[in-house]
Length: 354
Image (cartoon, rainbow, N blue to C red; front, side, top):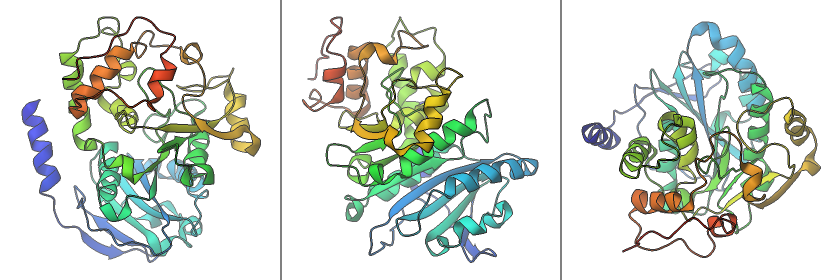
């Protein structure tokens, strides 16, 4: 695993130069097995929110289905407020193949597509992270979206995709108050702190503190191997924030996270919406009054308990994770969301921060 981690670090430093051309829409296109990362980014004078979009299309025959919901997601973008950077993984090499021209016409001048033959979601997150590391953009808010459902389609996926997209690109989140540095439709502290569906807006000043997303999956594997949680040992990767599920946990992996969310309904908390809470998800999409920005987690400890119990319910384990991942020598600040959320639990203790 250490060798694999070293290889990833080397790849993050030594990357091929992209070949660039333009497609029929006039959009800048680039193609490479890996994108050129850590670029010196040109800045827009009007400080638009950069939207990083992870697009996966496995096979050519999947294009019509994926195209429909990508169009729906991108219809929520506003050229006056957003710039768009697409990482396309798999079959799509140019946006013209998705017939997205109506949605992208106004965004064409500020849109770029990078194609990967093979990649994972953390490549797009790495690009977002690299962008935010530039001190010149520390005051900016970036948005992360992805084509949820193109890899693992399941029931009610369209409703959840709309639910997460609307929150991430909302004016409430992209203009989040100072008390927030990550904002989404819903933040859940269980089974690991995450946004279900992994779409959110975040301040670059916070994102720049995080571990490189290309290294985060290995970092979580090593932490779990070193700090064995016997109560959660038999749970699957989704319950422990491992493998591909580490991408959902990444944005909340530092104790300086100040999460806020928008969904005021006490019906949907995390996971895939079902028949019992589907209406709450639909109402959030269609009824603006259902969206009220508030520090998260907004509900009490018991509200978020679902499957995966007792994973995530041990505050000591979470504090150990912060310490291990970021080599911290101090406890979280008094503003950390966990102090209030876990206060009803009396079976935790502080790690040795020295």
